[in-house]
Each structure stands twice: as structure tokens, then as C-alpha cells.
Length: 461
Ligand code: SF4
Image 1 (tube, rainbow, N blue to C red):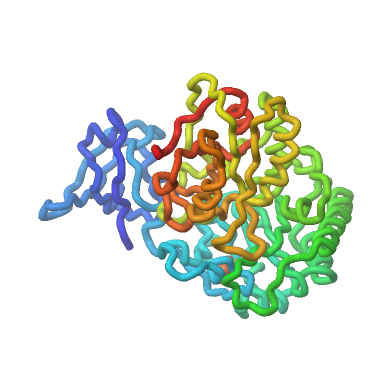
Image 2 (cartoon, rainbow, N blue to C red; image 1 turned 30 degrees about the vertical axis):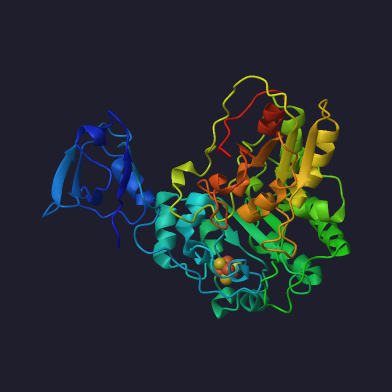
């Protein structure tokens, strides 16, 4: 078990007044060792704390008294979200994207987590195959929700087959426990053609209605397949299959509405783009419960682009693998880049995005009064396969695309491509050959950038 290490101290905070400093390890708080930031935040929420601190160079840890009001923030950021070990996944799914990463990427990307705490903190999906009675007890006691559970199928045998783990047949019993305990849980079905689609998918919908009607929502997403997959049975959906999935989802939405009063199940935006179907209206998404999972994001983007003053989901789209590299959990839903108004910029604009994003942006830009905006669909040559989302674009792909952008044009890039300033291949904006303006991945921010407000360039050529 490692201790939380202070990475920043807020000026004039209780931590600053008590003399805590960057690099200090907080071994215990009130005599208890925090296992993760969930514990840490609960413990530091109390008034007046005694914190056992280990400081580099000091011979022994020392007890520091921190005077603070109950509920007042301690005023430190710490280096990690989980201080004991992240629970890794014991499944071997043929559709797992981690197995489809090329060799040589940074190590943290290869971590297969199956940890309910990362589900709570970052929205990662968990299969519950490593879930325990103690975990259930903690979640129910501390009311840790919402949580996100990978269902894939409600057929035990098929689920064990898909996860390549016998525990896959039984681990959904914990989903029942969580739902019975009143925890908000959102489910996910990754549809693999020829495996859990067709009749198996219908059975899963029936199983959800029958056994898990208390789920808050279920996202239906297509498997992503990179050119590094070694799984002969995995293949992308055809257009007809995508249409079939949409038809099944829409029929089940009707049945769920009749039985439960809400649609429950929602298809990923990719299905609509792949099938060439119009995106449903915003009300269809019933509050966008799986926006961060790429469900309703395209509709929300279009609406906030066309009506920037309207409400709708926040629109923040984090990069894939958002939880790796110790991303601060409390930043999960926060916009990472402030929009900085700085007057009108009259240069022509090129908007770089993934191939799916370009299909959404194309019609919006065509209808925009400015005639000097180009949408550049950046092919994902790094991963290949059917990978078309902006969140998986790498620095290498963007660099290649930039070479084709006319001199003098402003280049805009959605922030979904970056985690903590880095692309998935480890490149940063500074590695690109020209300045790129990073825009929060929502329609309102893009509209603001196009309508005359400039953003701070993130790197110098
Ligand atoms: S459960 Fe998730 S992380 Fe684990 S093998 Fe399956 S897809 Fe990969």
C-alpha cells in the first residue's frame, strides 16, 4: 500500500497553514490509512485533523495537526486515486481494446482494471468478476454511485465465454445486490457480431427487463477493432448489422417505456453514423445518462452548436483511458481547458477530428455562415481497423494531417484527443509542427471558437 503524496497545496488553505508541502506522504489521517481518494476525501472532510506525515529527508514521520472546519477542503491534491493496488481484471475478452494496442506504448495504458472504485471515480466499466462481499458492503454503506457495469449478455454461459472467465457466469449476482441496495447503476453491452448480436441480443434485452429492471440505463456500443487484433472471430459490424442493432434497440425502447416508463437502452452514436440513420432528438436520450460513453454525444454536440445558449449535457469529452496516469478523480467532469476570449481571428479555420466526428461536423459547418471553415477527417492510421472516434486519434495521426493544412490557417482540435496534454502515443502539442488550438469537445465551444473568439494557442511552431 502506498500513501497519498501531496502534489500541490492551495495557498492559505488549512494544509498550507499547517505547513504541508509538495512531496509529503500522508501516512494516516486521524489514525486511519486511506485506501483511495474516496477514503481520503471522507477522512479529510472532518474538522481538525491529525495527519501522520513522512517528509523526504526527515528521519521519522511526524504528526501534524491541521486546524480546519468540518467540510472545509484540506487544500491539497494527491498523486493517485487508489493507494492500495488497483484491482486488475482477470478476464480475457476477445474484444478487449487493451489487447489491441500495439507494443511500445506507455505502460499505464496496458493496465486492465476491473475496480469498482475507478467505476465510481471515472465512469470505467467493471464486470464485477473480482467483486467481493466487502466491496458490496462498502458501496452500500458509503452509497458509492453511480457505478458502471459491463453486462454484454445476461446468458451466464455466453457471458463466461465472452469474458473467457468462468466467473463471468455468476458475477452479475453482484449487480442484483447493488440494485437491491438502491445504488444507481448504468450497464453496457458491447455487441460483437456473430457472438452476442441477433437472438442473443434480444435475449439480453429480455433478461434486463426481467432481472435488472432497476438499472438506470444500458448503453449498446459496437466493438472497436484495431489492426492489432489477433482474434479471428472479431470483426466490425456491416452497415446492415448496424441497422439491425438500431431496429432492435428502438423496439426494446418501446417495450421498456411501456413496462418501466423510460427507454432504458440507448444505441451508441457510432451505430447511427454507420447505418446512415438520422440522430434521434435530444429528448430521446432522457437526460443523456451515457453521454461520456459516446451515446447521445453527437446529438448534444449538434444542438449545442446550433443553439449555443441552450442547456444540455456539459459536453466535456475526456480522452480514452482517462483514468490512467493518475488523473485526478475530482477533475473527471471538469473542463480541462478554459476558453480564453481574445478578440476576432479572421484566419481560415481547419477543424481536425476523427472520421466519425467529421460526419457530424460536416453538415454543421456547411450550414455555418462562414465559408472558410474546413473539416478535416483524420484517418486513424495508428490503430487502423474500424477506429474512427476522435478520442483515439494519436499525435502521429494529427501530425500527418497537419502537413496537409494550408499555411496560415487556424487549426482546431477537440480536447478528447488528449489526456493531461498527451496523445495516446505519448506525443504532446509541442511535438506538432505548428500551433494547434485545443477546444473542449462540445458544440458550444466549437461555435464560440468559430464565431470570432480566439483560443490560446497551445504550442509555438
Ligand atoms: S473486462 Fe475489460 S479490461 Fe478486462 S479483458 Fe474484458 S474488455 Fe479487457
